Image 1: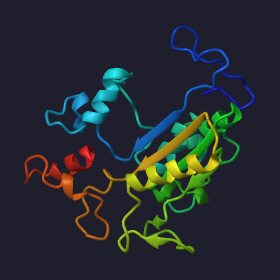
Image 2: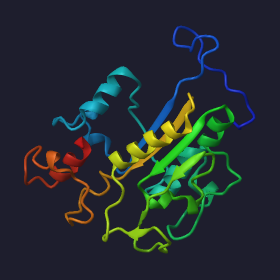
Image 3: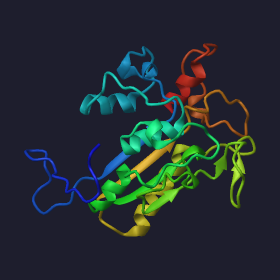
Length: 231
């Protein structure tokens, strides 16, 4: 949390360190909005909701205790990206509060260390008008907004259209990487909203793909949520 962009980073030493003269590894940060740990198989869910994440957990580090710094998006992600408490960031209410530029963000640190930084969000609460694009070479906003947000050119409202799906964001990121023509290293950040939208049955806002619609036992209050987690 004390790192600033002008502080040099010492990369890992030992057998896992990059070979001398080689660039640091790419970093991919995926945030799945409103994903409950107790609905993941690697945290005790009996149904096979998360084989991909379970595989990552087996190979990497799985935290047993994690505390969110707030109950909603903007202060929580502001805290994640700055290692500051929401009250210090001044993020309390939804309508118009922005992430202050005075605080150094994780992508700014990565950028200062030679990373090409790309961020993509399906959640309009952290669109660039709220200053969450700090430190990114490219930052792609959600083009679908919540009803209380002012609509600008090229934007629409959730209900008329669904929030951007994960697959769309992945494709945009791959295209951006290809367009830059740079070998890396890359820092890629994604914010996905499929699980957040689990309760929507409106055909214009529903993000559940048909191949996941029949999974698990129908009728359970959480069946649709578990299907979204698996997707």
